[in-house]
Image (tube, rainbow, N blue to C red; front, side):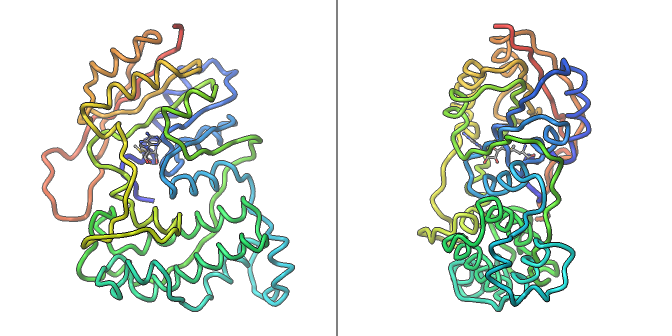
Length: 346
Ligand SMILES: C[S@@+](CC[C@H](N)C(=O)[O-])C[C@H]1O[C@@H](n2cnc3c(N)ncnc32)[C@H](O)[C@@H]1O
């Protein structure tokens, strides 16, 4: 998923830094601002037990799938109940269930009524929005009927979120939609199997405010990737939030925005205080913190905060900035991406 602040393309750099600073006997990593789950998945791939967290519903769903699930679910109950579709050709059970969902007829529902041309909003074509409603309703009803487990529920929900993002008619985020449908938005919504990484027992995912959760957990490495600037994730991904929660919220304005939780890390006046509270209360051996040179916090401020726990070391890399496909002119094409490390001795 093309996500503001995603560390997907920085993973080789992050892994290199981690290999340089680790002792080798670390067992638990916490990705407390997990977003798409890219960094938690890296730690899981390296064999660590991961605690992932994000206060957005869609991020929680993605992490529940990618971090907690270790292999393709079997959907035993559901397949038993739907004897009929055992004749669907697919390599495995999850393939069969995804094929069934992909074959559903569109239905009326919150997505079509609020984010498609039916509402004069062009986030999705009417066909894709109605299909998404049908799929979302099926997933919810299977859960209510106890035909799928919690893991299976989040597997399907994450697959829907990934697929619906691929056909969104936006420049990149959901703060606005394009007036004309672009070619990718007219492709049919198609759920695909999730790529799951290796088997690590006991991974857990939370949907909490990071500053609350930090007081309740312990880990060997705490990875911090807070928002860097004023762009609130709740506003920029409000449509995905509603599809994940499917809670029929009150929406308003041209974009159909829902109420959303604001992060202190996006506010210049409150970010330092929030980060200091997080760092001081962390029960961990290492802290790794990603930030760039254009964030609301200066590098000096970050170092001052990390020094409360030990001697910070900074690693840096040039990084192509996140660009929306909206013709906007950017002053710089690249930013400097920092990873700060501190071994907690205080
Ligand atoms: C820079 S993004 C993380 C990106 C992630 N590392 C990735 O690769 O996808 C920051 C994330 O922090 C979450 N967030 C912001 N404030 C938060 C808070 N106070 N508690 C929990 N999550 C928060 C946002 O929802 C967003 O997903």
